[in-house]
Amino acid sequence: MKVDGQHMRSIELAGDGWSCNVIDQRLLPHRIEWASLETLAEACTAISEMWVRGAPLIGITAAYGVALAMHADPSDASLDCAYRELAATRPTAINLLWALDLMRTTLESVEPRAREQAAYEQAAKMAEQDVRSCEAIGEHGLGVLQEIAEQRDSAGPLRILTHCNAGWLATVDWGTALAPIYKAHALGIDLMVYVDETRPRNQGASLTAWELAQEGIPHALIVDNVGGHLMQHGMVDLCIVGSDRTTATGDVCNKIGTYLKALAAYDNDVPFFAALPFSTIDWSVRDGVQEIPIEERAQREVTHIRGVNSRGELDELSLAPQHTRALNFGFDVTPARLVTKIITERGVAEASEQGLSELYKLARGAHTS
Ligand code: MRU
Image 1 (cartoon, rainbow, N blue to C red):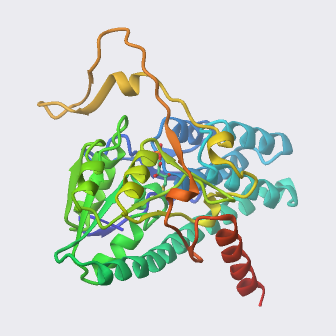
Image 2: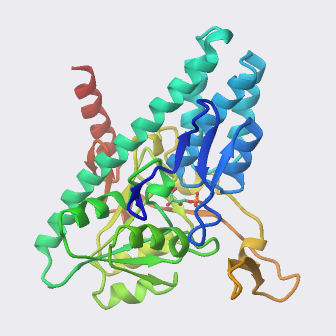
Image 3: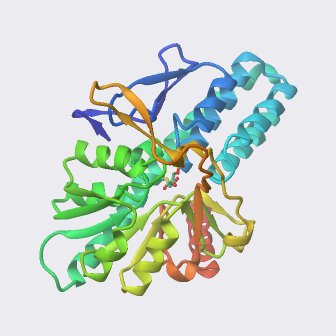
């Protein structure tokens, strides 16, 4: 997508052909700074400290993290260590393990002396695949948006509520939940996007609002508690969110607060969509609430808030009484029954085991024929 009119991706190989550049998302929207990742340790820090975030981008960064490890030492022991250390960075987004498994399977069958090249080729392939998948999610989601725009009674812009950041910054390019919005805007469909700020790290306020502004898409930032009120008053035509892990049965794990939006949507007959690539589906999990590990992050993310002060410096302010204990769960699970449809790169599915597996089989058939 574009930044100041210039095309950008969230991660790219540097000119030296082996190190990797990522946008340091902790500094957005105030500064655009690139961070250079040169070692496995730096790739691990970039993921765990959320310089990069969003399930698909976490996966691609991990793939390049393995490539960096192979650049330093292509031995079996180094491959094992890279897998282990990257897998421990964040627990919820399944794209991380998906990417690491793919890298390990590819590299295990390659002689150590050829591993470095094979690792960079595989990581680049996965990054390109992510771009293609997200663009395809955009196309399929566009059809959904057009259908809702045609069917609704009210005039004016199509009003969409989204949570967290599931735009191009959370992927390599295009995004998942925002991809259909970008496609619709490019076609001239009149849109209004309500952006949940998404406490505690405010990915909506700092990333989604920034992305939408860069593309000139009308939007309004809302605090996390407003969505229910908007839906009760007929001010939202649909909700669309991303996912960090989706079960074989269609439960959607996404940024904390998603579940409450889905409940409000259900209660007010507002369609609720999750947009995700197949790499986000964990076919081994059936009950998302019971089985998906939910990341618990530092209390300080809740008791403090980060931003830019009146001198233009990045700063942190304390919000709560000293020593207040905070609970900071990063994700929650929206049961499939609250999800209207799942939008993937292969088409739109019912949020159910049958819906997802039929789409999977259909696409496999198309690939093998
Ligand atoms: O903690 P984060 O910022 O990594 O959480 C990101 C989200 O929850 C996104 O909505 C999700 O990864 C879908 S991204 C395309």
